Image (cartoon, rainbow, N blue to C red; front, side):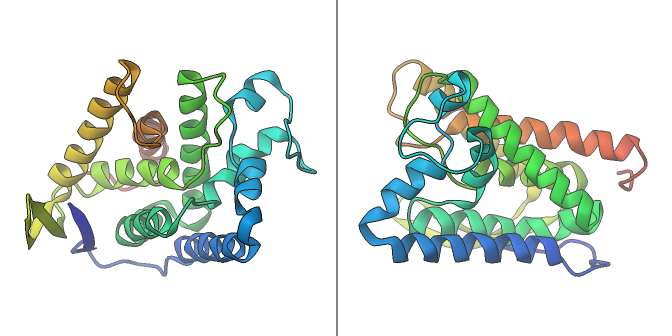
Length: 228
């Protein structure tokens, strides 16, 4: 299922932060492409390497910032065009309305915190892994969680693939996002049993999603979000 538009209530504000996040991600990806053969070194240096975080030690290639900050820098790095395109599409569809609810600074704090928890969740699963984790998907999983809680009945226009066939249909956010997170749990726990995860950090998605659920309720209880 590939969502590409939604039909929520009218926004009250312009999603400046969401647009800025997308722009930064695109600019960083362009920079990666300009690096040519040095792209892999850049990803290894500024991606989140679990071994570095758990051991508090920066392994080569080293960077001029504390290694723990890679938990944030990794959110803006992507491995390839499909990786960044899919992440930015999801952020574009769902992020504007979540920012409208949280406010600009609230959304930025929410996004970064969800991404941070996502990175820590993946580290908890594979603390000695030396392959870097990169991508915005953990933070975006938090955005999906917020959207699920705030706009569960909103229709999302989706490109739906059924075997070799496809169609365009509208699916309620509750079912679309619910199905997505269910798959993350299934594939994530399957990978613990030895199944190939295809390089996908499923537990980063799960961690970011759970963080999004909790943070949305915290904002709501603090009176910073409208009640359902």
